[in-house]
Length: 304
Image: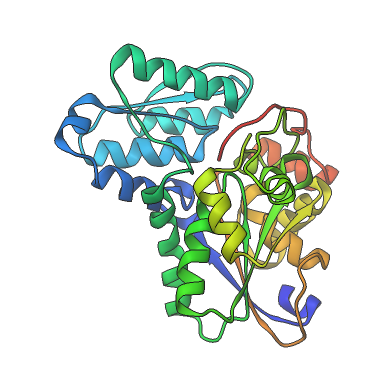
């Protein structure tokens, strides 16, 4: 139904069904599984608005490793509670991802914790890339893969896997207009940091493009496309209505971009959109799908 609107055969890779509700569990498991004995004894710390926090907490608990997550004070209650439920110590600090990162680094110095970056890490990105390996096994002859971008770990992993196996497949990254760190980095020719972000897609509101991920995107991704919050909200509503997939705004962004006509596709092409997560606040979902642009558009930078 949705694919027919733009004349393509559409597939969805549903990472909203993953444990902890997003693709982030892939990278977290890969990273925690590689920790040495000293690091396991010391425990890990990260900063996150929610999805990486939950994933690292879950992976750490499974490995019997202590986990601390620093979350901005505006993080949704559902994501804070879930992170605590998976066993993490949650520290609420700051109004931006930059401030939360600074606090995490402070805890590294004070407690000797091991810092786990939410996206700019080879093992994290490689773990996220397993989603592409599954996608290529599950579908044949993909012409296009559309991936949402926050800090870039997901698209770096996916691009590396897809281009290594199917070089002809085009990859498009999608960012919110109000959190376009990767697009700004590509335009500047170097990774840049944003002063602030403004988007309903808190899972994509990274304050910077990861250095590792920027390099992969620059080499392997065909283009990075920006979409408005209104387009994202429309896509979220269409996913719920026509596919019955409950996604958070970040998770609906790839499909939203395709439906809006922002992604260059040809009639009859086989296109896969990554539904990156489903950790949505239900009260917020009502306002975002009803009002089109949602209420949460003015918060500073986060990092998922």
